[in-house]
Image 1: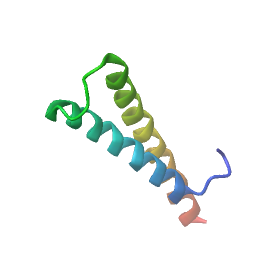
Image 2: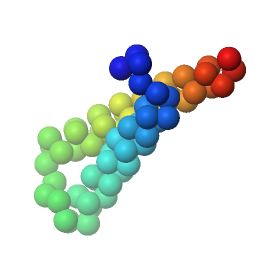
Image 3: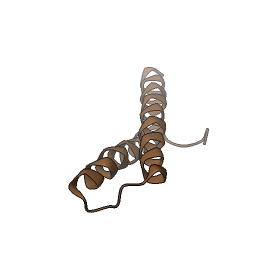
Image 4: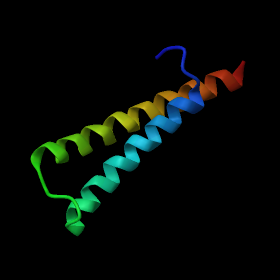
Length: 66
């Protein structure tokens, strides 16, 4: 994971945060059945995506300064 490009890390973080938003939205609409496991998966994907995006942004600014 340390040799990942910052843009790739930001993109993966964005996809995870997007899943963390769309998952509960689909549960509210009734398209996906509400379950505890899916709710926890959505929550953790959102949190992990946020941290990956922040780490990727920090790496990107560090590369740009050099």
